[in-house]
Image (cartoon, rainbow, N blue to C red; front, side, top):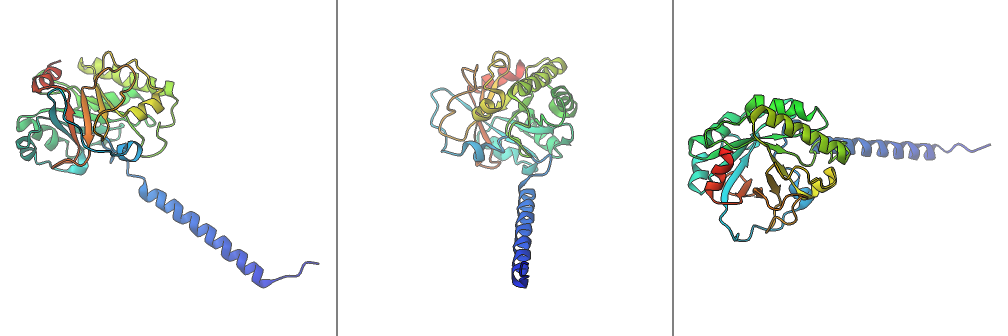
Length: 269
């Protein structure tokens, strides 16, 4: 007959309590590091996944400075940016089919009012609704295009999922289909091909490095380094490059691959 040892039982209970406490702490920590829906922004996952390895080298061709902004930057000092040489800007308009940027009007109209060429972007969440539904939501909430010479086509911001699995639980084929659904709907609504913002490493992982969009959709590449590195399949050059999230005034700074007249040409279609 086994001998009952009170001390052993107490130790087991203590060990079980410590294990449960550790599990609860881990769950709480994970919850604390998962951002709230709607808080995502362009390049959010770049430092964690691609790193940060310096500022860009001097380009061989003229490039035009731009910025991208979202709600976490609040009301932006557009005059300060304009006076520093920033000539174009994109503001986050929407995310999924559940969020609109409360600062969008100040950011989108404010950049325009100081003389910049401006546009809007949509943060994609392919695990929540279809590409078509998100393109419609984007166009209906500020992501359209007007032939005024100073409005850029909308941007599909497709990158790491800040709320869960990097590829939003989709296979590469399903991701490509979702992106095509968004792009086709956006063009049907606006007459313009949307710009694709992404990072090469995410594109390779989550689309299988699909090259079929390059002929129609301009590329906005994200890479915080001295150069853009290898581009996703199909694109022989980038149109825009987000090169840092620590620039002056708003942090997220970009280069347009050409002089100001090329920015104007994209706005004019």
